[in-house]
Amino acid sequence: MRNLTKSVFGLATAGFLVVGLAACSTPAETPSSSTSSKPAATATTEANPTPLATIPTLTGVDTKVTLDSGFTGALTTLGLTPGVIGTATLDGSTGTLAFPITGGNVKYFDPEQSYRP
Image (cartoon, rainbow, N blue to C red; front, side, top):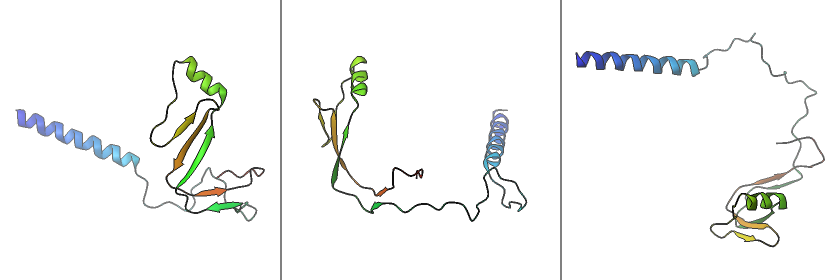
């Protein structure tokens, strides 16, 4: 009786998994006449603009962020004290955090344009 219960439970569980995974899948073929909520690309579609500056590999550089006084005031109101780890520093008098950038890249676009990557 116990083996029968285990078998039925196992088959039911497997069935639920198969149905769940099938519901998450996408069809192999997509009909060409399907409608999409996205607008079709046209010749007038604006291409991505060229960045004003590009740094392909950024390592070994530090950056600084000045915290808004409202933010630091809110932390104080909540009884929290900001802190740092590793080689980061916090200047309490100016609210400036300085920390290393361990890697990445930068593409700087014109802030006057509406493009947002």
